[in-house]
Length: 264
Image 1 (cartoon, rainbow, N blue to C red):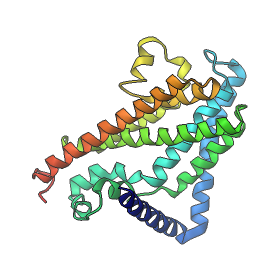
Image 2 (image 1 turned 180 degrees about the vertical axis):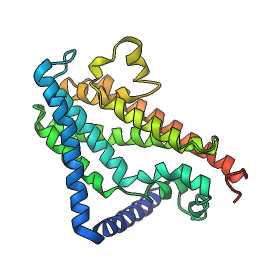
Image 3 (image 1 turned 120 degrees about the vertical axis):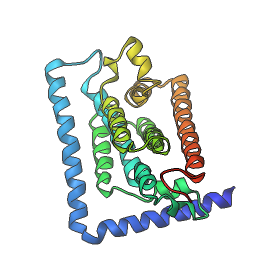
C-alpha cells in the first residue's frame, strides 16, 4: 500500500512539474493571468465590503466572517482547479471517445483524468485566500491551520460535486452544460453568508446541495471550535466523495460494456 501511494505521489509530482513548465512557456502571460485572477477575486470581495459598511452585519455575520468564508472558498477552488481540474472534462472525453486513452494505462483512470488539466491562473486564488485570512480579524496559528485544513476538505467537496455531475454523462447524453450549471450553482451558493439560510433552506444546503458545508462549517470552526462539528464536516465530505466515486465507477462499467458513446 505504501509503495503504491509513493508511486502515485511521484507520478502526481511529475505531472504537476510538466503543468508548470507548460504554464511558464510564456512567463508574462502566466503571471498576468494570476494577477487578473487576484484582481477579479478582490473586486468581488470589495462589493461585499461595501455592503457590510452600510448594513453592519447580516444576521450576525460581519465582514470578518465573510473574509474567512472567501479565504476557505478561494483556497479550496485553488486546490481543485490547479491539481484536479481534469475531472470536468469527463463528459467531453465520453462524447468524443477519448476516455479510452486513459483506460489503457495501468494507473487509476480517475487519477489520470483528474490531473490531466490544470488552471495555472488559479494560483491567484491561493494568493487571494491568504490575503483575506490575514485581514479577517481571526489571525492566529491555530486558526491558520484550521483554515488550511478546511480549505483542503473544501477542495475534496468541490471535486466530489464536479465528479458527480460529470459522471452524469455516462447516463445522459449532452450533459456537459447541465453539469456545468449545477457546479456553478454550488459555487455560487457556497459564496453566500450562511446566516441567510434558515429552517428548511439550511437543511437543504447542508445535505442535498451541500454548499452550506463550505459557507457555514469553516467559519463556525474558526469562531468557536467544536469537535462534533469538526467530525460532522469530515464525515459529510467523506460521504459525498464516496458517492461520487461510486457514481464514476458505475458509469465506467456502463461505458466499458459498450454504448453509443463508444466501445472499448
